[in-house]
Image: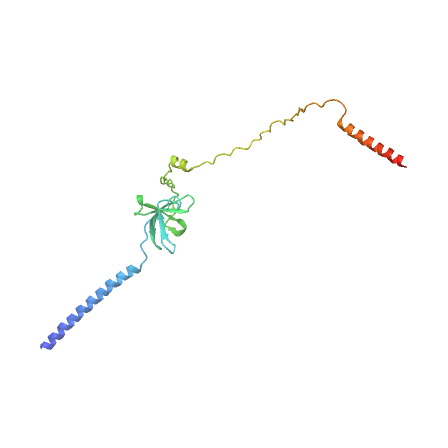
Length: 202
């Protein structure tokens, strides 16, 4: 056997090993790809699947008013164990490890229930509202100025009308013939003399 035959022999062996290795690697990658494209495994029991097209909020209780804090989110297609439902079937209780006590609540219209029928669970008590700061009553009283009540005007009757009485204090006139009569008498006598004188001239 010459050197060319030996080289050809080892080349064939190397080519065969390379081919077998490539086929094995391809089979391994193909199996991983098939697993990646398979649907996520379905948990046993009753479960909730997010059917909403956007992430949904997980809350600590079945209310957006009494439980405004969001404790987590679920993405579209996520599957979580469902534990119960409220009496009005508006909220679904789910197992959520990140929540206090490992339990959270999602709005029922955003999920689809599969694997069985959910039981009605007792609604948790409403959390105590946070303490609000109170205003000092003394400070409020200092700024609470009450308007002074105005007095209603009262009618005061005028004093009684006093009619003055005047007393004539002039001295009394002496009794006798008034001076006017004397003047009238003189005028009458003068006129009579004038008439007599006029008659005598004729």
